[in-house]
Image (cartoon, rainbow, N blue to C red; front, side, top):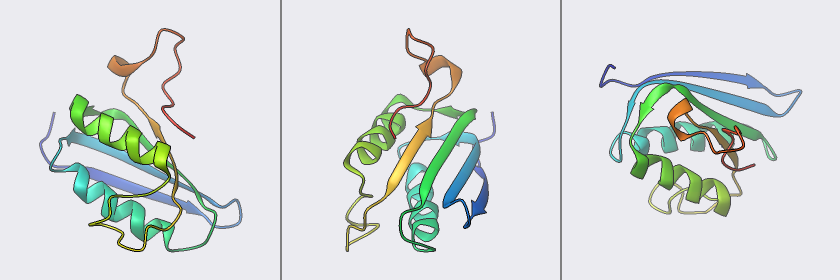
Length: 108
């Protein structure tokens, strides 16, 4: 798996939805770059539903834990977004993180 992140952002302003598809290796360090992408997408319009699709990425458990925590709190890290704007983020985890129910979505 490539160390470099490959990120594709799809924006549907009419449907108020953003999908961020990630490939590569997501680490505790590289997840910071994803937060910046999410912040920029979140600034496009209020109330956007954002989804980070990690199903094609290799993700360190600590990075996934961070993403889960921020999706549950509905805020990005303060050093990324000092104003702490509401952020409606869900995460689609890679297959190795599927729960026993088979649901990969970590938060809504």
